[in-house]
Structures are given as structure tokens and as C-alpha cells.
Image 1 (cartoon, each protein chain N blue to C red):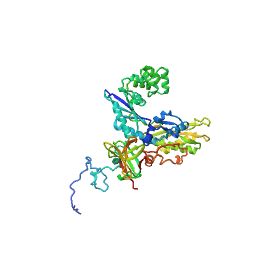
Image 2: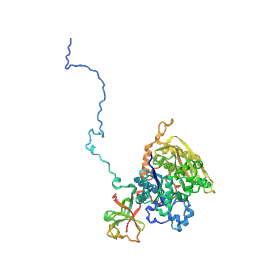
Image 3: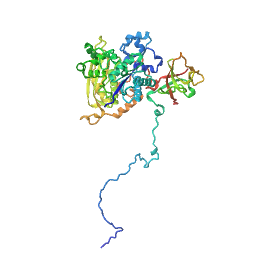
Image 4: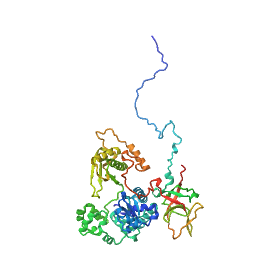
Length: 426
Length: 149
């Protein structure tokens, strides 16, 4: 008989905002927002900002005055910092528990053995405090017999101050009432479109979905929807994934800080994005069989002439050697680029990804011109000294098209020259 | 007729019979000069500063010092401090504390009746932790790195 399990979902509170507060304790109760790439729109808010009515996705230019009026602290996204702090949170969890699935940058599922009568809340509070002490990031923990119910519990832990950030749904007498007051759209795995389908059928709450007819669910929401309903019933159907499968495609793309109209600048950008993607490719031990490049003007500006196009080129054999991938990428770019347009964004996608050792020998490629040792050396240097320390000449040095991030906080934990400073003057 | 006298006689001629292999010992260390090193039995690990200075990497942060209030214990302006958040800030420890929101390095002095943050430089007075002072422990300083060149 398989060991019965209980699931805990650990979710960091307002993660990016909390990261910005770690080395700025004076901001602990102040309104903060974090902006997306190119300082476009709001992607994170502290609770104080939420209270001011600021919403996810609010464009920065629209709320600038309001931010100044309420003295809201604005940060550009600092993914280097967020990635490092996320890794630390996950490491602390993994030190405490053997079965941790890192679900996203700020969420992890933990599988715990089921012991009747055990207070998971006490243990969860202990875990929560451990993360706060070691990494300074506040989290909420929800516990349930399935991942889906753990997610419900987590949301309730966050929304209700009386739970103090920890809620165990297995311990709660009125599970029925809780699910009856839980909007079906908020259930994990139910997106907006599915929720609309369900609401038209009179299924408005999690309880309604739980009690709905299996055959109907299977038909309208596929087997994935049925799994969700069963999980709501307390039957675990979604196992913990302890080993992250390698990515099936790798994208590197960003919007430009200023519009780009020359082929020379576009080539620089594509070369830079290609290098980043290739680094990730090698990092997961893979090779790519094809490269796709896409370019786009600003589709939000209808007054400008629009050009959006992409092209894919296959490689003679799968490769992780940047110069070969670049050749294919630049070939695509030269084929689709049109002069006279103000391009706003470009991107590179590496597809047909296979494990590096599976590269087949190509009839016309008997002598490999690849140089894996060169790539290894470049990757090591860039890891040590910062990304793009060694880069392709094609990627350009000036990079005048680069992303605008005027409010970025320092790389506190990854750069010796940007360490946080402590006062020894008082 | 010439007679040849042989100095030694050939007692017999035998054919060679190949029977099997005789394994020879292979030296597990490099034999560059042709002799085993007396140090072979005592090989230790190479020294790594991370092992010495960082016990819990996920909870360890580096910070830079600005000022001279802690020179008495060898913490100078521009030094780097190794800070471990997983250690308990107890009496006698040098800690990083957020005093009114500002990260500061001090020694923690706790008695039954009072709680103080002391400098290690006679030019700086102790800070008494009272009701109106928000003071939150940020981490414990485990070592200081001072680079001469």
C-alpha cells in the first residue's frame, strides 16, 4: 500500500517586492512597485501599494503622477537578485525536507508523509520562520491532501489575516463551506476560458466543480479538468515532479529601449539574444536542431507602419556551438528584415532540442568545426565575471538599443562591487 | 681435420610454451621520478576558503563596512563582513541590525534588564534599545575580510 501523503504549497509573499526590501529595511511598511522590462508596467506590488489601488499590469506612464503623489518606491526588475534569493529559499526548504518540487520562482510544493493527528500547522509555522530568518523573505504556507487543495489553502492563508500566513485545510472542519465560498476561476488549473464555460453551466464555486458530473467534466475540460475535480475531492492525481525536465524550446527576447531601424543594430540585438539562449542551451546539456528569429514593430501604436515576421532555419545537425547557431540566426534576420520600419522587439528561439550527446553525424559534416572547449571556457568566464564579459563581436559593445531599467537596485548578492553597505558611523 | 672445443656445452634445446599472464602491480600514484612519494599516504584535501568561512551558504550574505565604529575588533572601513542569518543573535555577538531602518554593525550586549548595541571604538556611544527605537536583528557577523592589496 502506497504511503499516504499530504502536500504543502510554500508561496513567497509579493516576491519581487519582498526581495527589494531585504537590503532596504526602511521600506518594510512602505508602498513599493516593481516594473517589467523597459520599465513598462507593474509586475509586483507590496501590500501598501495594493491598498492604494495599484493593479498588476498598470502601465508606468499612466500611474507616474499617482506614484509620486503617494511616495511609492519604484524599482526596475532585478532578476539577478530575485533568482539568487529564490534559489536560497528553495535550498533552505530542501535542507528541511527531502521531497521539494520547485514550481516557479517563488513557489514550491512539499510532499509530507501523512500521520493522523499530526499538526501540520505547527510544522508549517516552523518552516515559515526558518525561511524568514535565513533569507528574509516572508512566505505563506497552505496544506492539503492534494496539490490543488494545498493551493486553495495557500490562497486562504494569504487572504485571511487571522491565519497568520499558515492554513491547513485537512484540519478544517468546514471544508465544504470553504469550497463553497471559493470562486471556481481561482482554482489551480482553471483558466479564464474554462471558468466561463463552467459558469455558464452553473458551476460557480470550487464546491460546484468538485461535485459536478465526471463525464461532463471530461468532455468539456479534458482529462486535465477531471484531475482538478478529483483533486478537489481529496484524491491526489498530480504527482510531485522532483526532476525538472529540460526545456523543449529556449527563448531569448526583449523589447528595445528605443526603436531600431537599421540592420546593423538588429544584428547586434539578435546576436546578443542568441548568445544568451545558447548559454542556457549548454547549461542544460542540450543541442538545438533549428533556430527561429522573430522581429516586430510596436503593435500598440496603430499610427506607425507595422511589420511582424518570423523565420526558422534548420541546422545541418543539432548544435550548441554559438557561432553555428548565430550563422543560422543572422541568415533568418537578413531574410525578414525590412528597412523603413521602427522595430520595437526581436527574439530568438532555439527549437528541436535534443541531449547534446545525441547529435547525429551528418554526411557532409565529417570533420566537426565545433569547439565545445571554447564554449566551456566562455561560459565559465561569463559566470564568474558577469554575463557578456566575453561575447561575440557581432553582439556589439555599445548596444544603444538595450533595455531601459532606470530604477534597478544593485546586484547585492552577485557582484562584489555592489554589496550592500552597513553603517559603522554611529 | 679441425676439432672444435666448446667452452660450455648446450645441455638441451627446449621449445617455448605460452602458459598465462603474470599480473604486475600498477602504481596508483604517478611515478614521475620512478619512486613512490612518502607523502602518498597523507594526501589531504586542497584548502577552500568557502569551507572555512561559510557554514550555511543559503543563509550567508556579504556586506561592506562604511565607517570606523568597530575598529577595536579589527573591522575597518571598506572591509567585507561575512553575515550568517541562520545564527541566533545572542549576547556578545557582533551583529548586523536594522536600526530605524538602517543596516548597522554593532556588538549586542544583553542583560536581564537592558539591551544595548555597542560600538568598538571609544568615540562612539552605546545605543540603548528602547520602545521608540525600531531595532531588528538582520544577521550575525562570523568573520571579517580585510584586503591589504
